[in-house]
Length: 451
View 1: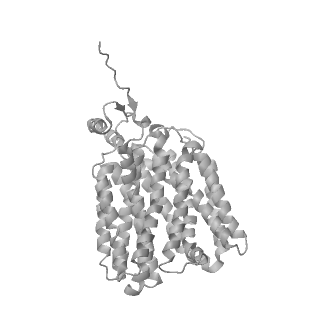
View 2: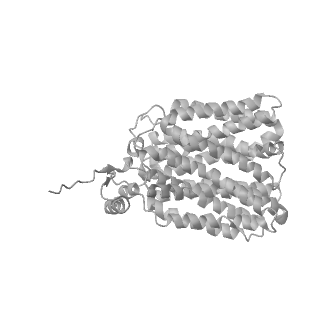
View 3: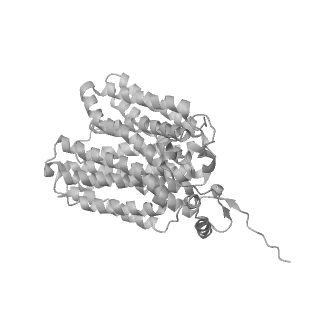
């Protein structure tokens, strides 16, 4: 007698990490990679481009501000677009746009052309963040969400490091700036090919009432024995972000994101001084020092991927902000710190920024429902970019007028504010499904508590 054994059914959130999950994580991280690459490569290209286009300080400032302004618009607008039209469609279009604009930048002949193209590149790179992170989060098993979001956060620094390497190799090449800009086309093509065969998010399909397509996607890519929690179809309404419970979450994530990125930008600003103390010179060799700085930030993401599941989101966020605050404050109060103290303090800050750096992507994807998830990521990122734009403009002025020590103490105060907000508002979402954490009724210590 033959006894048939049916394969036990598995919940979508409890699945093992499959090759498809790895592909979605890898190609979804392409946007942050390109962000790090494109934002860093401009600094190296300007070394050659400044005398060619006769750029003064005002034009250089406009180039930097144009990209950040584009990011602000792109994240706010295209998260909402992705919630309406789907993750996969926008997932492809924005990468094509980045490649086309990077190619066009190779042929600029005036400062205004550079500013316009950098603004447009900022828009399309900003568009990819909410789309890609929502896609990755919606496919990730519960136990792997911190890992996949950590991978996305780390890829920004991989992109920045790659840009410094390319800039170093092309620095002495005639018209090397053209090839620096055009080099972004290569990762764009690789990412586009990798994304081409990925499926649409089943959660998004359910929220749009496309149940049959969701079932077909699940069967095709995961087999007939995987169940996904049913989500009733709901229309995407941007106004839902401003409901009290969700607005509170936006403010919380936006504040901790801002408090993390402003001091981080300060460290990148002080990078040339650290590099000089280490014996590097300005120009080509400075790229090598920038690689070291990026590696410190990237290294902090690796243990944080695992600590977020073992220690938990809330304790890691609070502890990280505490250490980051102490590191900056130490440099601010110690007169004439030694080179080793400077390196040690900056390295400590960079390493422990890994936890908050991941949570600024993880929290918005966990704390908002599918129908507004990408919109929420875009809104939060735009919120944080306001502080980035202001600090990029104000930091050099403040530093010139008051010096490094007071500037570092301001950075420590900003980090301390992030610590206080985390103590009062940070929720614990470890081991919980997206359906649970994104509910307006979800109750946890901090921001997620329904009033």
